Image 1: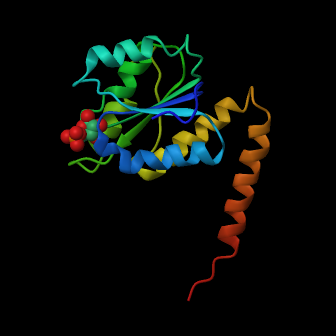
Image 2: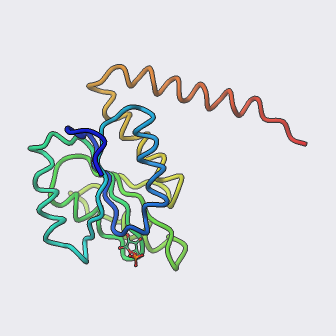
Image 3: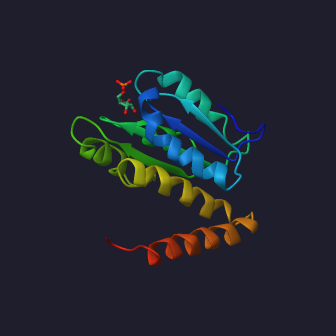
Length: 163
Ligand code: RP5
């Protein structure tokens, strides 16, 4: 799935079953009008296709990769091994409540970084917000949009009334 011809962000996930959560990342990028593409690619089930895809992202001018996986979650690490484009890892909830995914994603050896977010929905949303912040260095309009997003979030919290 591609929102436009020249995506700036690639959202990858190890299985279609991750989409229910990763849709939150895609929706947020859409809200910020950031062209992105979404693909199912697995470090284990499609290793060659994953490496081939990542090898091309620099020439395609994709600036951030968001990689989500669950269980023995090696997708983000494998992506990071094949590119210097920043890779943000999102651990998916799993049979071990995502702790296995979190540790598999976050415990990278020194030299190959993965910026790891929280498990599940919070991580999906924050991966997209972090991608926006990275892109804001060269797309100044995104700074304004990010500040507005935070302002609206604060206003919503301050309006909360408990019964
Ligand atoms: C991982 O295995 C995927 O990222 C997913 O979170 C998990 C389970 O995949 P399915 O068995 O649902 O396809 O590779």
